[in-house]
Length: 152
Image (cartoon, rainbow, N blue to C red; front, side):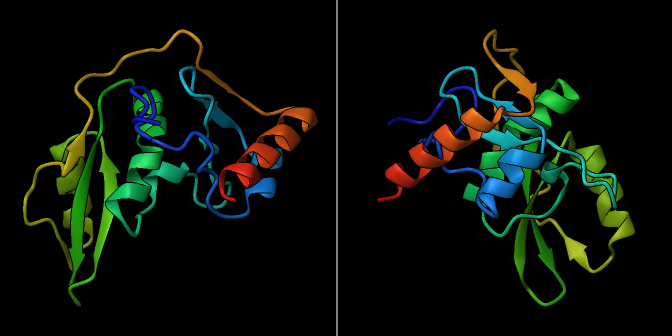
C-alpha cells in the first residue's frame, strides 16, 4: 500500500503502537476517512496534552501522529528534529516555528539545528469521511484482528 494522503501512513493498522486494546477501548480516536486507521487523539488527563504533543523516537513514528495535530489545530503542522544536550535526537510536532521557539526557550538543554520541519504536509485539508470518536466494542475487536493479521 502506498502512503495514505490523509494520515501519512502506508500501514492502515499500525497504530496504536503501545497497549492497542487499552487505547482503542478507552481513548478517543481519529479515524482516517481514507484508509480507516485509528490514531489516538485523546487528551492525557494528568498533563492536559494530546499524544501528538509528546516527543517521538523516530520521524516515522511522529508521522503516524501528525494528522491528529493537524485536525486539532486546523493547519498543516510540521515535525522538527530536536537534539538534547547529550546528543539524543527526538521528533516533535509543532504548529509553526514560533511554537518551536517557545519550546526551545523553555527547554534550554534542547536545540533544533535546522529550525524548519523535517516533514510537513502541503496544506490542511478536511476529509469528508474522517471521524473523531470512541470505537464500539465490535469495532475494537475487528480493528485488533485486522492489526494482528497484518503483522503476521
